[in-house]
Image (tube, rainbow, N blue to C red; front, side, top):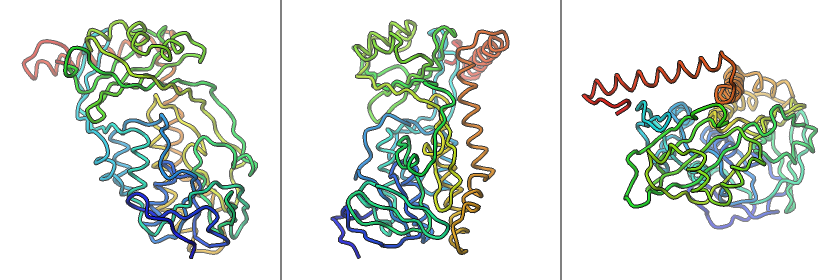
Length: 405
């Protein structure tokens, strides 16, 4: 048994770098982000021995998913992690929708605001103690039809029947295995995250607010404001080049950039101050050469998604759910770990449906937000009419006269 460091967090043990040398597990998981931690939780909950490998003890402060919707919470229920996610997040039960500086609709929904590091750490905290977290980097992976060898940068290695690559956007290991990425949409979207605080008042007149773009020339999908604890968090999704002057202004002065670019927003927020902005461009890519024995890619390691479309967590949870509840138990029940077994996961109908839905939504939302041809103009007009109509009906039901009141 390798030496164990003091227990860290609520759900796992940390093993020193270089402590493993030829130790065997059923599954080695490379990467302890959302996909890797969720896979470790599911496999350990099913009695499957696994090691989770990552150089960091805590999730880094990445700007990624900051809100979970009802479809993602439903998947989390199936996985078994929904209670810890709900306890770590801030619930939203309704959101007001604005167009042209006016509230046009109030939607009832179920969402939880949660920063990505808190999301990952919540799942990490739920991982059963049977899982060992190796604080180390993976130097190389040697694959084969029976067992795989994971070589650690700190020395030693692990022998596993299966390697799950949950390495996110890092291409290093994939490249070394001959798995190549093909960019299908360069700089597809840009996400901006920042806190927004009211000035001269205790709180905003809304709990959650979504502002749609006024016109295609704005090259904006939407701005969403939602609670994170006692803070109001803002996510702005754009379709602009990285050298766009508005992005440069956001880096210099987020408050000025926000209200200059969205002048009607102040009608809804009043005076407000935006905290420092984090800007994240996203390339959409797919991988090739991934059908190999003994290794499987999940989440962003397999294909990226557009944050504006909000489908990334759906992809991750669907990948992990199908892999760990359907395929891995079946693979371990029989000898070998050939490429034909990996193909069963990649061809899984639920996985393929989630991947395709994510891809379609990414391109549909970009076209809906930016295209000026007649079909897209009609789609936007019809959607706006529906929002105003629903808002009027809601106001009548509640004895109010304003749209969405």
